[in-house]
Image 1 (spheres, rainbow, N blue to C red):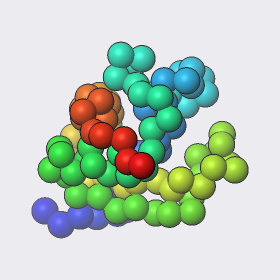
Image 2 (tube, rainbow, N blue to C red):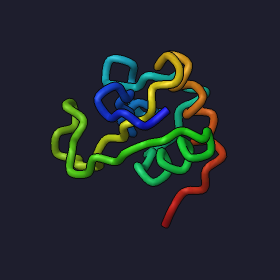
Image 3 (cartoon, rainbow, N blue to C red):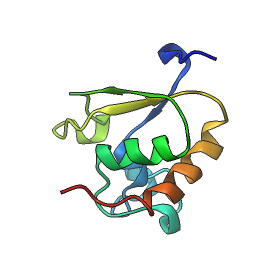
Image 4 (tube, helix red, strand yellow):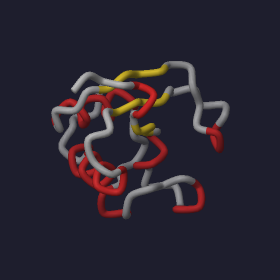
Length: 98
């Protein structure tokens, strides 16, 4: 199946930030969250899951409009409620880029 950006899930690094509360945008349980997630780490985690993705740079999470890390569009092959924990688990194994 070809990657369709219109039907893709949107992933923000803020979804996986342990310093955020659920109301501040964290979408995974604390056990799967990490400190200061970077977009490059998110891309590596999605790659490890074998999913297609597209980076949209210069986008900012609405609650952190000043931080333009971008957003990641990930192919929609499973419900987002299953995707987020899998990405969170992979993030814990991805080395932090310098």
